[in-house]
Image (cartoon, rainbow, N blue to C red; front, side):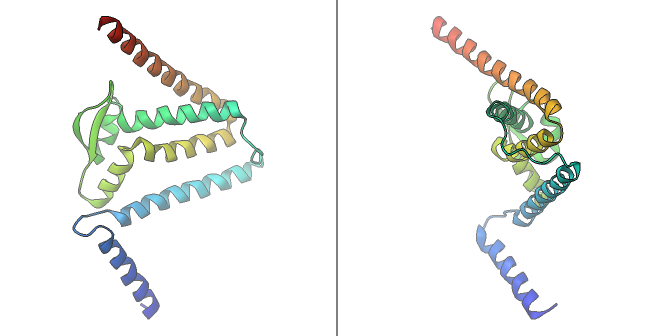
Length: 175
């Protein structure tokens, strides 16, 4: 190994050790997840380019709103929903009940890659980046089908809001 490579490696190791002294943080595994994300974006970008459809100058406001609500709902469903817990279970541990239909989980600690994935899949804000990216590329490749799928998640999000409103109204009437 060259002296420069050794200095870079030593600097990276020191940065990871000093990032959170006394606490294990899976920085290398987070970097791997960022690499997976970047590779997916690069691959999908090439696919969009090869399809020669081009990228629209702008996404119409109604599509942007539809995709935004769908991204929120799907991210929350993937990260918190009781029914999707089996998919998160290899990376998480159950902590307790959350909001209606949701659970609170925490990332498993070992191995570090499992912890890093656990942090991703239990965080709806983190999942939104991945889900939003998926919706964007799906929209660029198949806009009509993506609008239909996004409509489903937007309808479910609206239904959730109505369910919460109905419950709150019932509680305020009862007392």
